[in-house]
Amino acid sequence: MKLTFPHARLKTLWDEAVRQWPVSVRAMNGRNSPGFWLVGGQGIYLVHNGVRPRGSVIVAYANECDPLKVPVQSWLGIKRAIFGDSDGMEFVDSVMIGTAVDAGAAIEVAFEPDTMTVTVVEKGGASVRFQSLRNRAKKDTTSGRSCSAGIRFGAARRD
Image (cartoon, rainbow, N blue to C red):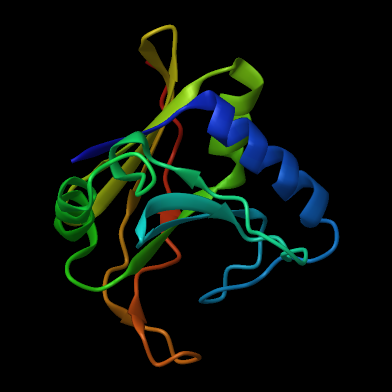
């Protein structure tokens, strides 16, 4: 299963994150470094982990799971294939989004049962790729909900 996040959406999200990270970073499952959460909920989207200003939250929906553009039957099937019947979260390191924004590129996120691969896609090809283990169905002790969070990134690989 693969999701695509276009450059324009990433740029808007990145600009907001860079403004908010110096104020505060919201920690989750012991991770307190600047980054992004890939969230499976009402669609699938990226959101930064900086403190949120009052008002609306900026998110970057995946092309395939944008509830404002894709019929619910389509995005819900993809969300369930990736996260199951409950909502879920995975951590994406800030370097991946920053690299894509700097390059004017999109990212693709591919999911396997136990891994997630984030790829910066420039000029139709992969330029940087990180693969990480997924931590699935961990209990979030603050809310009582199950969620996925805190993936670990391995070494970068240039294609």
